[in-house]
Image 1 (spheres, rainbow, N blue to C red):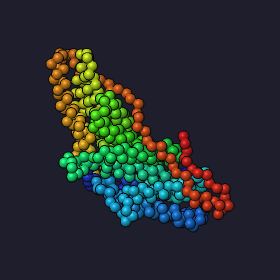
Image 2: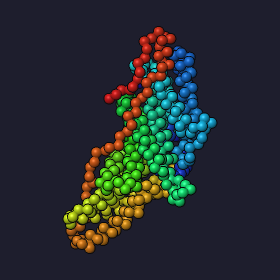
Image 3: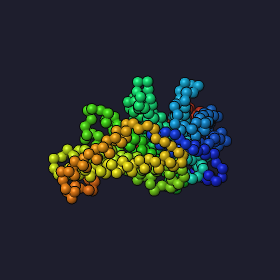
Image 4: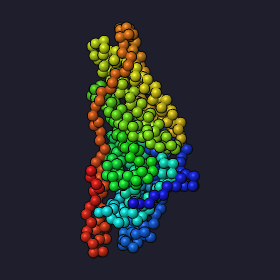
Length: 427
């Protein structure tokens, strides 16, 4: 079954919270950090010394790196070089990838070992300071969550506008934007795998015992957030392209609305009562309202291309809705930045830089022209329904890695049948 221990924040845990996380293009709701554990005492009688030591070394590496960098990696900063010539983000991500194949040997074929070790992680969005559960699937879930959060942190760094020698206005390069879309899909893939292949390994009781950071609703919301921000980048690139039609831009904007609406539906009823959790909820609300401003704007422009009084009236209503949602999004943005930990907006760029200039101007112009042409009573005051498009952007098809070959050697040394490779419960 697995033992559970949750420690409240009142008992003096180790969670550290920055007061200000700087510029935010992509909100990362804190990093869950693992605490040290003892494999040798609990697995020494069941596994060889070499395998126990390898498990311990791999996890200790993660504990040390996450403990040092976790509290600061969500703050705005450039990637820091390490003694190995890479980046903190890349090294920690690699450590997690190295750990997973060895860890998964503990759950192969329903192994009795999967409940022998208690894994302890410090939470961020849950009121409990930390959660300890004696179940390897909890550890796998926590690792996938951390891999996704590191990816979102990397995306945030890439999407912060920078000045260059030949460009006065801060901007995000096309190379960074394209790279970020891939990173969003990768993050979504980790989270999708967690929901579809790892959570089902836990009983209903065990899932209810998970911290809210790992609740299905939070995992789904984060996955949808990654996809929604990926579409936002696509829309910005379409705006910059002379070949992209209004229809293409409207479709992307409407898809973005659906991603953020689904993210909000998944997160709105969860007990995200502390600062990180409440800020997460405010971020989703802000982006949902912002996406509706974009969708109604492009819908209004297409409707205005119609040749009838009805279409012109619907266009006015859609553009007015876009203007109202744009004003509401600015208030939602302010509420998000004011919530602890404090944050701020980077210089406007991409989709919202363009729309912040176009929505007020075009709305004012179209409303004036159409109301000069038609009587007030004939103008449709209710915003028309947005078109419903199928969602095109999907998470990467991430699969759990096969069990490390050291487990085959372990079984041969003990005279047991070889282990098959694990690919998770493919449901």
